Image (cartoon, helix red, strand yellow):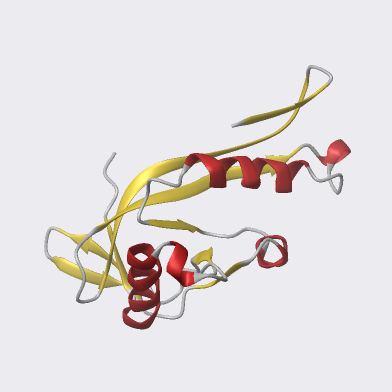
Length: 137
């Protein structure tokens, strides 16, 4: 996702598809948001918020959205909250706890009836923790 002002690239954001598995649930198809940035000369003008809003429109087909925040207050202002459960990565030899990993995901919608399945999965996922597949390469 590129953000331009009068043809000048001022910011960007992207997402990758990952499988996050809350304890006791199947692997959830997750939009993992990365590389959210605004050029320093253009910060505090709403471009990061614009990029995140546009990404939110694009990732509606995923069961979960998540990110590893570099600027926690920015994401909190956008309605994201800290993951409350434990985290781990799945390796060839089993699960490796990652207690130092910070993950955020969007707070549940004000009207959970709008998306009952997704809301229920998010609620359960927050309670149980998450397991990420180890990245290769």
